[in-house]
Image 1 (cartoon, rainbow, N blue to C red):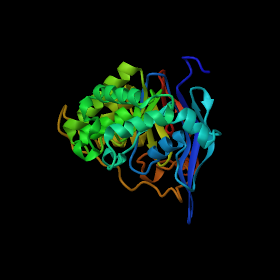
Image 2 (cartoon, helix red, strand yellow):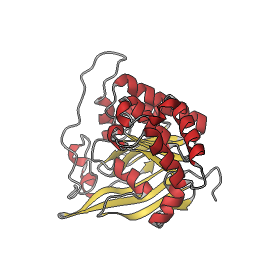
Image 3 (cartoon, rainbow, N blue to C red):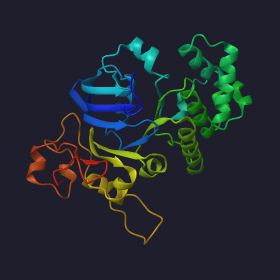
Image 4 (tube, rainbow, N blue to C red):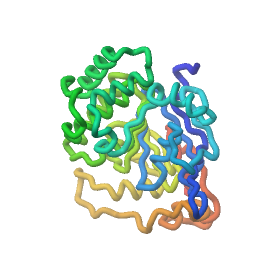
Length: 324
């Protein structure tokens, strides 16, 4: 087993591809980052940049035709890429790593009571637990996430959107995982409820000492909860570091563009600047740096060589850009 200084999760050069009729889609390429114990990391980027593919690769629940072509995924010190599906089910999923999927509205079965769905998750992964004990645990979990324990016998349609999201968080925590992955936890919720859900996740992280990976396209959500930030573009990690240094001194032109395109309520009113162009087609990506067709600082080398993630400055700040 690993010791406390080992990161709970470490990705080392992970490339996941999807096979289509037109060829291989390079959804993620050479992705590397790590999450320390008790730490929250945000994974940010525009739609289709490979964020959810990273989550599905970590849990090895990729759709048919997709596969991890290279790289290592170290969870608690052990490389889980070679693990069989049954070993993943027994040892990793739910007990080790749990996920809250995007779209809480559709993630629960509408014909089963909410409590029964959480009880099923507990008893499936811990067969020794009796139904009565699982019910007690379910009520305690619901109470912990701010839902009345008496609501165990309600159906999902009797819950509001925010309550359904809370019930999903309770379900994800049912087997005391070490790492929680939240894929766009605020999607389809109004701003007030979104803020409540984020506060709940912050509280749970402190209370349970959870490690978390939060996937979002919204920089403000990640800044609220996470200590570290990885910016993804077209399947690559463009920049990676602690939240403060990435926000205060963004190094990659894409990160700079993302921050400029985001409205602020402080200081003078400024016109928002959008990033020109479109994200590339990952079936046929541009040569060299994938961002070069949209980059204001593109040089000749950018068209030929894909830059590697390199450490910049004294802190934990990495960037993949030929400017540095």
